[in-house]
Length: 190
Image 1 (cartoon, rainbow, N blue to C red):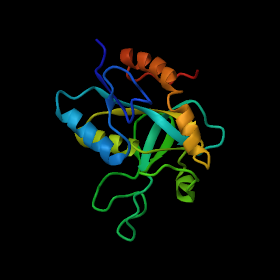
Image 2: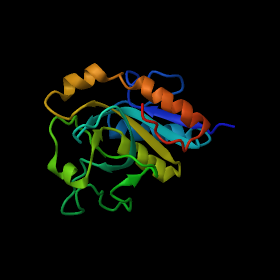
Image 3: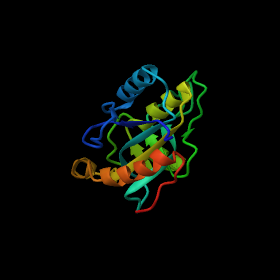
């Protein structure tokens, strides 16, 4: 019997597929929508996030899997180091338990590399994954995330993102078929 998967994507334009929870853009929308979904019935065996991301690592392209995610825009110094929420025991990086890239999530569309993110080893940036991973951690549900590199987080990011918004859909749907039969299936290279 196949494991129950909850597919989560910010926008229908990224993944228009039956049964996908579309959260809307940003951390608050993602946290709210996923929390409501998880509280609305039996928990899934796995939450699977798919979306677009800006690539910070030169040469990174296509569909990538996320190994861990950190909060790129949390900066509450001097109460806590950048990336950590004061009074929250969560680690700086939330791990998917899978190999892959490090993602930085923030409520801004990145059009220039942030030196702090590069120092942390962040390779891709998005606007929802940290909230999704955080809710999953709180609710005790495993998660995996797959990101299609739609832009390079530079001056052309907005134009590139819009042009490639739906470009990774088919690559992800191929991976999804493997996940439906084996939720631990590694990302296959195209």
